[in-house]
Length: 225
Picture 1 (spheres, rainbow, N blue to C red):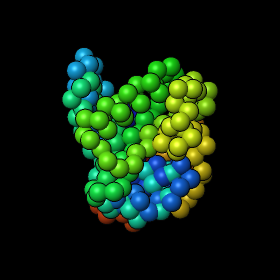
Picture 2 (picture 1 turned 135 degrees about the horizontal axis):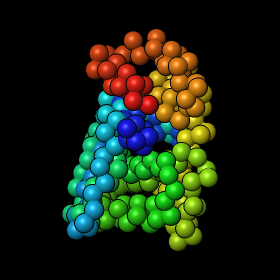
Picture 3 (picture 1 turned 90 degrees about the vertical axis):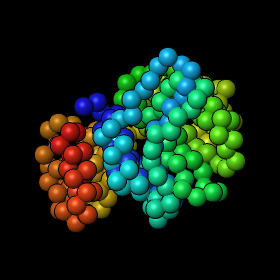
């Protein structure tokens, strides 16, 4: 399974993970649902990364954990795939708010070089905002596996960066913690092969305390990593 697919599984299961990675309060994670959206009219389709999709969906707080935010709001969000009718393309994933007034989060996870990622992502964001007449706030968050893959944000998006709408994080900097299952799974995904066995053992006790379905999703992430 592709590494980015696994990462989306984490986001789906643990929505707070994104906010934790961003160093933000994870409370808002409960107000979000992680989804994929489709942009029509471009002969290309990007498959939703199923493993991470499941993690985000099962643990909505993952995004907020990754952002370092309070995960409480995660209960008000649903992670899903949505269709944008003007680009014939399905985006990687979106944290869709379940109530009016909350910002929407567009998420990209990248484990290989991509010179066009920022252009493509911002195109998708603005197509969605216009097509859906979005009235509230938004953020586009890019998670690169490591800094060396990031070509740098084009200068034309300086305003989005300065306004806090476009953020970039590196998974190699994910904190090593024993208190967060979501971040533990993220660490497992980027962990060197030699360390995986120890990481799995560390997660085992915490996973057993989860509801049955979340246990299954967490175990699937661990196995497929």
